[in-house]
Image 1 (cartoon, rainbow, N blue to C red):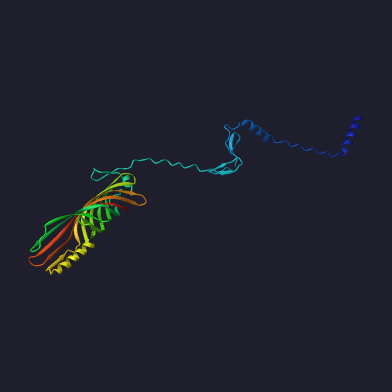
Image 2: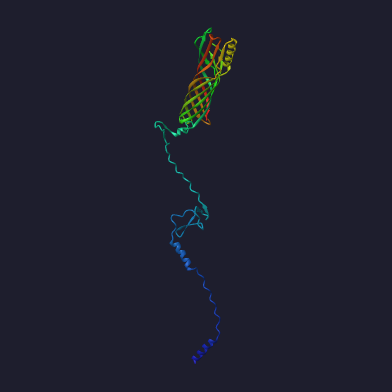
Length: 340
């Protein structure tokens, strides 16, 4: 019976509708073990960077990584505020050029050596260079003598030769030169001189005799020796043709001679009207310098001779007289001018 009761009870129990099961609460989400564990492992397994990272970098996993993302490009650097800045270009260092002594050129003859550095001082020029100069000079002193030769026949008589001392009264002189450098310190060329007012005074006479104007054409040899970086010493020798163009008192005296000669009913009257030629030579010492223009100052000494007008008067076949004069003189000048 007990078994029957237990069996019925179980059947009854089986027939009772069971209550709805209460849903279990979802389990609380736990942090992934894979995430937390590596972080701890990373902190534990990587030491701090040594030495410390420089500006613009941070230490991560034992390495210095740029704070800038994406990384800065070439020629840029990362700042602490994670921005890129262009790096300044490194200074350019120019290596000094090796210093070499100036080359020394030997002249073709082998005996003269010229340094090109001296020729570059604008006074000593290279061979083939032309130099043109203009000068004006004032006479310091001058004098000489006049030699007169006289021939006569018949009624007339005169001393065959006579000499009169003279003082030169020429006031100033103008000069032009054209020279070419045969070597840096040697010039060759030609020069022209003009004395616009040529005059002299004879010893017994107190009056000046205006002769006219003088012209001289000279060959020039001039040496130039530097004495500093901008000044050179010039030494010149010259010689050439001297010419007198008659004028002034000398021309008036010739006209007066012809007037008197014709008044005497002479058969022939003659006066040389010129131009009259002679010769001259001289020397010059001066300084040549360069500034804004090339200048020069010189002291010159000239020695010259020139013919003076000759006269002839013939009265009859037996009576005649002829005279001819030659003037010899020396002058000293002080001159200044420029060179091109």
